[in-house]
Image (cartoon, rainbow, N blue to C red; front, top):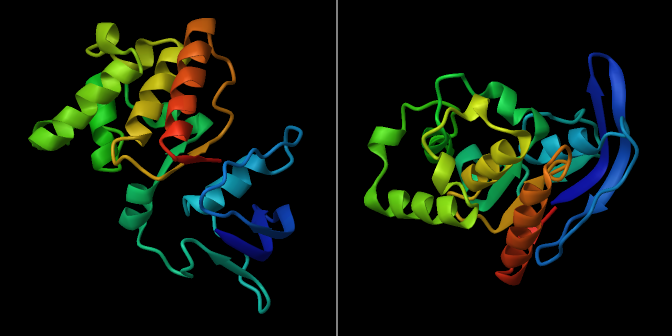
Length: 195
């Protein structure tokens, strides 16, 4: 990703000003800053849920393209944002949530349409993220740590090359911190880039 002179306003308030950075493939990057400094906004520029102000000398390129197909983006980059769990309805169980990563929605409609190959990927993720014992439980009934692990499994269904995580360790129980740390290190060993 390449950011040149990027400004972002939300509700007439400037959140980011004159951002210039290149994120290179093959690098893991840690973005640090105090609360309210614009870290989450910066990450949302990558998943195209927020757009910068268009100006003469500014540009934002993903994979060296000014315009990128959202489905191509989802296959290359997995995303985890703090507010994702709020978008999941009360009726969705963990299995449906993970399988919904293939459709880009947060509901159970896709679960009956998955292929055998997709099903195998889901089963592998369930085991890797130690979700077997709770896989049929409703997502909204789970602890923050269980929800985070499920959302990470969902973000990995396309086996992306890049994983973008917004405060992945916040409000987690000790077991989830250990599992998350172990699995992120495994992903890094598989040459998955983490931001």
